[in-house]
Length: 450
Image 1 (cartoon, helix red, strand yellow):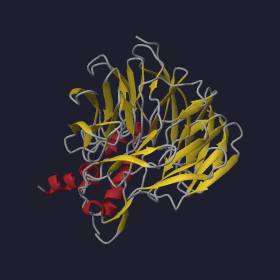
Image 2 (cartoon, rainbow, N blue to C red; image 1 turned 60 degrees about the vertical axis):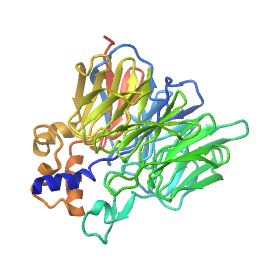
Image 3 (cartoon, rainbow, N blue to C red; image 1 turned 90 degrees about the vertical axis):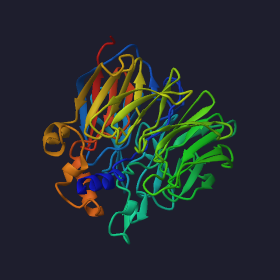
Image 4 (cartoon, rainbow, N blue to C red; image 1 turned 45 degrees about the horizontal axis):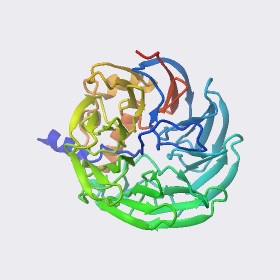
């Protein structure tokens, strides 16, 4: 009974993410705007398994940020406070930009400028080629989501970081006939829209909690979730609210960390509720919801051919749902939580799990055909940390009292030794890129399609 209680206590804190958004079209490599998570369907043919390691680049901190590439350069942030530009062919550093905090947001690009945020409280605009700062915008402060005695953990009078709130909001670029805006959420509870060239504030919108979700733009509407558990639809030009959709506000099952996917007039939302929702893009009216079996859904959905693909936390799976009805079509089970947003190319979905495994799944094989690789840290530490090769909090705690926040943090640090993957992959030139908690950015060749 004690083991069951400990497991249930830790399950409340053992799920998290962020990430982020998708649409139904392929990467627009010729577009002047490249938003990290707005296009998660890449060019590809058939099933392409993971090939040989192309290169890996070591930073001095965990990589929760998701990489993007442009013009032969890979860009990614690190918890070591640096934002890196690396040669796509060799992995050699081109330049790095130093901030005074962890870089947990992912970048977006407009023309020759790259945008990202840092825990130092600033969002930056940096020259894509030289790494020189163009401007920075100060928020009221960036931090992990915090609550007093979070999820009922002890001591109850202590302000605690949500240990599974990995990301800051990633900026996205919006262009209309009059101006170009960079829009992002903040730990101060605001959504900000600033001028892309000068960094001047255009508008801001206040929510009731930290906003670590990344905005998704469809036409002139911006969709973004908050830790207050509401999804907001805002006018991109003015910041005025069009509608909001409320998810459950219950201890242990409150908050929105993921972003949305927009397709066929619908907005698809993953929440800690724990459900996946489909709502009308114009009205916010609920169309259907999927019961996630008491598992937080913190991954962002990718929609392809009317099928929704999304990762789960404590059911350790990549789900395939009918986007019109929410009916589960299939699930592929992994060894741990799937927090990142999958990348799809051809018939293949690429994604990592919290144990440090990275998968290439043939979407036409009913889960039977896949390839996988492990991070260096997983290879070294899995036998000591995992139980039967799977994530198990009670096993990793070694008898410690998981009702204590300090003991949960220790278990979290143990899990990080696996090289946990919460960074979402990016595909370019037959190579897949992803970051890891072991500090590496990995680049793997993709094999020829089958």
